[in-house]
Amino acid sequence: MSGKDSKDNVADLRQDHARANESSPRRIPHAYLRKPLAIGAVAIVGASLLAGYPWLFGTPLMLQIAISVLIYVPLVVGQNIITGNSGQLSMGHAAFYAVGAYCTGILVTRLDGFPALAAVALAIVGAGLLGLLIGFPALRVSGDYLFILTIGLNLIVVSVATQWEAATGGARGLTRIPLFSVGGYEFRTPEDFYYVVLIAAVLCVGVAAAVLSSRFGRLLEAARDDRAAAEACGVSITGMRLSAFVIGSSMAGLSGAMFAYNLGFVGPQSFTLQQSLLIFEMVIIGGLASIRGSILGAIILVALPEALRFLQDYRLGLGGVIILILMVWRPNGLLGKGVVAPLVKS
Amino acid sequence: MSEFGQQLLNGLAAGSIYALLAVGYSLVYGLLELINFAHGHVYMVGTFVVLSSMLAGFPFAFALVIGMGFGALLGVLIERVAYRPFRGANRIIPTVSAVAVTLILENVAAQVWGPATRRFDTPLPTSAIEILGLRISWIQVIVLAVTAVIAVMLYLMVQYTSWGRNVRAIRDDMQSAELVGVPVNRIVTSVYALGGALGVLAGVLFAAYYDSVYVSMGFYGTLYAFTAAVIGGIGDLRGAFIGGVLLGIVQALTAGYISSGYMDAVTFGLLIVFLVFRPLGLSNSGQVSRV
Image 1 (cartoon, rainbow over the protein chains, first blue to last red):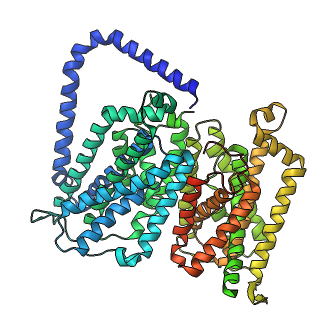
Image 2 (image 1 turned 180 degrees about the horizontal axis):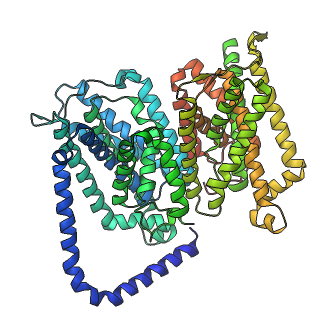
Image 3 (image 1 turned 30 degrees about the vertical axis):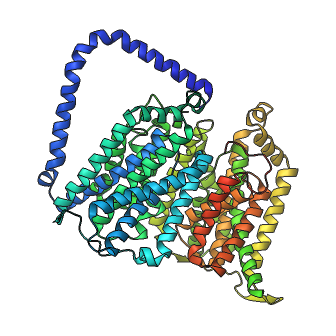
């Protein structure tokens, strides 16, 4: 990650640009027609597959797998914004997940008839606030120190959730969380709830795509790629790193709320360090700084062990083996962006 | 007052074990500026190997040697597979590959030895003696004695042997050391082997002290020892011992006067405070950079 390397990177980028410009006159007419058509076709097929999933693969197991994957999507996308796009090695995502789940759980079990959408919104805000809180110390440490710091945060949250019985129900957790409902309609069946998590995941992916493709998204990656150069251009490193933390953690809050409604129960055992490791694995395997990669990572680590039942017990370790191979081979993950990779450049 | 003294003593004994573990980190960190995240898992697996050897009928001393040998081998293997290919790469890569190794070890250990806590019976004496109104168990005496011996031994090895001179040369400047003929790879391998063996020794003391061994002691070991190393100033052997003992005492006082349930929260709170406000630790030797 030395200055020289990043200069090489810049030079490469310029050459790429030059090449693209040279050949663009010939390619544009086709691209104009072909690309939107292809994207449109894929989008329509994808959307109808997702919408029709309960009818197409409606077994209870397949439905639960899909719900699990969709609950993980905001978590992994959020972790990827922190780690992939902003380049911060955070390892305690389950802490934010827990805050989201407990916010929802406490609100809806303590206050009768608390509106579900408000509970979800407050879960997002609560997790985001913790992200803001931990973002400040995170500004002072980086690399593997941040890694350890966030592991510590995860363990503190689990420890508080287990000990503070009055609020969290302690080790037994919060039970009897009511069904998710909007305006009097209760989402009773898994088929119904599937659409809730689908909408949540799609909204989250949409927000992430919009944020990351905006000017802000590029500033975020600029701050990651070359701190000094970005700072010289007037980018606030502090602001970028802090906002990445807040965005990423609030997405985890959304997942937490969905988790609470899906299970009807919130207990500390769902938010251990192993959970953080799993989310981290999903990002690394799927691909850094890539939303598609995040989704792919979630699918691989949720659905694959489910499909290959005999591997269930080896999920964590199997992920470890995959990561070890990837680190040698494709350090940016399966769908990670190859151009900007100072995070894991050798 | 005597209760306070008792807590202090308990903390001292537990802290000595953390100190032994923290040494494993500081040795490697001092050498390569790399945090060996898999260290805690080496110590967990090695302790289980000792347990299995004892259950297979080997005498305790022999089982300990097997376990320490296993820890040394595992340390070397991990260095080969997960660290050496990425030496000189961005520091994030070895961190991620170390996480991968811990996941594999954790998973395998849970499958081989089960997720439940196992008892760890050793022939070490369990009785206690009373001195000045304080209950001191023999196991505490043994822990303190072993830690003291290891501390002195390590200091002498690093300061007065040719091996130690090589280690210090690599620590100061790896490339120059290689140029003047220091066998860098061999020395690094030996440090990982030593770290692994000492880790298993600490693990066995830990297991004997609490009469239990369990899979998640790998992660907790990593974090406690890392906290100890950070408090003392990471990369500094003396600091590792001081940090370990301080952490043990803080934990014992938390357990004694607040609640043992909040021990982890206090420990990691301390870790965060140190990382943020005093990343060089108490020793402040100025050796560490790039925090």
